[in-house]
Length: 141
Image 1 (cartoon, rainbow, N blue to C red):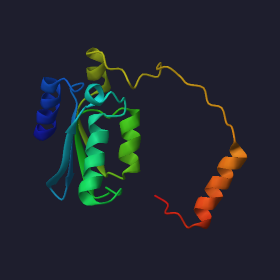
Image 2 (image 1 turned 90 degrees about the vertical axis):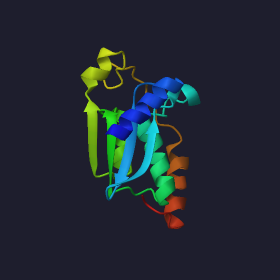
Image 3 (image 1 turned 180 degrees about the vertical axis):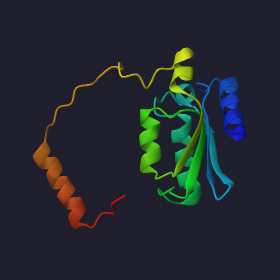
Image 4 (image 1 turned 60 degrees about the horizontal axis):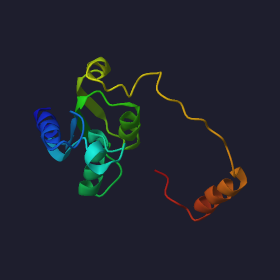
């Protein structure tokens, strides 16, 4: 967790984003470390956990991080929780809670966040696309 905190401090000092850092560990060794880069990259998906997952996948040459753990300074938001789940990371250690993040203005987990509307369209063409992937024996991940 100390490394995650150092990463978060680097991000704060560099004005890259919020006070969030993350470290991915495999077999007791650091695979990747990252901090929030939302402001620097002007990309709302560049949370510390996502950045660390991207770096770990590149370092290990795989999308499967099932033998890894992640340490993060704040409880992962819904987007990061999903990314952690998709990466198959086995354990999440976090420092601050959602309430702690909300107390300084970050509220990405509230049930009152802006909703978007969903509209299904072009189902037939998309189903054809799915069938094409299946027929070419595309890898399921």
